Image 1 (spheres, one colour):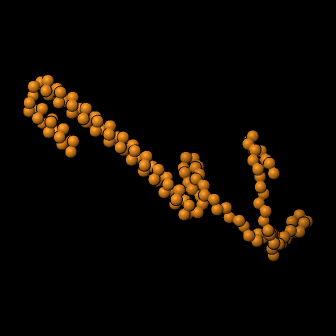
Image 2 (image 1 turned 120 degrees about the horizontal axis):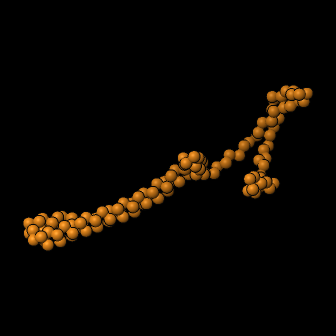
Image 3 (image 1 turned 120 degrees about the vertical axis):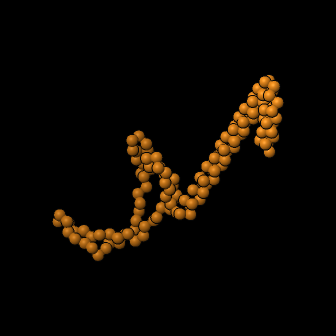
Amino acid sequence: MRLTYRGIAYEYMPITQNSVLGKISGRHRGQNWRRKNATHLKMNRTTAQLKYRGLAYHIGEPEEIQQILEQKRRFFVKKREKVENKLTQTHLSNIHRNLERRLQVAKANGDVKLVHLLEDEARQIAC
């Protein structure tokens, strides 16, 4: 059955259940009724990643959820390592640039003692 909700069309598949008349019965507004008991219910075994008001959560089998969480963890670890590597490279390049500038100023001023100290610092950073 094809239905539409807020302009979005979708296919509706009603759930068919086998049922058996139960022992509980009664009378309501002059009509007899008897409760129906389902013989079996199908469980939906799908796994889904959902979000409600910005909070992410997962439904489904625990093993499948663990696999999804492990994949997400690996993704974020790789992303973090990439960012950390980039930050480390930027930090080291800034240190080298600053050291070179300080060394040039020390040589221009003729401060031999400071030049030796800065060259020692450069060797320590290279190790």
